[in-house]
Length: 253
Image: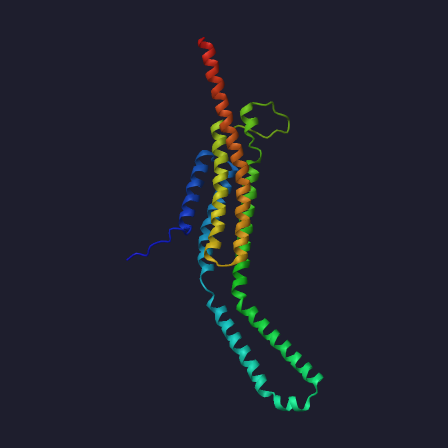
């Protein structure tokens, strides 16, 4: 019987398929644009992320064996040292100050030993966390690059026909093309947040979850600015339609 997929879990293969479909749509609509190149790189990163997430989800057996050996050897060493000490003789001949100093040194040694054991036990988690942080930094860079591409796409200037200056950027898009361009940017930001969420879904690490939340907050804030521009286009389109209807009514009367 086939294993049923978890309905509420993100599927990396579906995210890759969606990214590939978006890359094809952008390449067909804006074949020579920088946004198409960015989405092509995002697709490559999405495919690599699928493999990375699978590798990170698997346990590092070598490190786990090393941690188990360190734990056993550490505990055995402490027991052996404690067995070598003649505690009755120490208690009979040592004064209170000497006994206190000896106990303090023993406690310090125990703390150092268990600190080293804890370092080895958490080594796998820290290595995985560092690799995830490196990948999340790449996603942040993608988000800011996408924001740079939509930065000069001002719908009020493009649709309003305002006079250009010598330093004005080139604006050759129609209303429909501008709307699609901004929508593609918003979709790419959403896919970035989903790729980041794959790490939080496969690794049970609080710091990783917090870093993923930061990426999601970044893409959400940048996407909100884009959707504001899309809403402006919609309102300008509605206003233009109202003016055309009013002009037609005046012409008939």
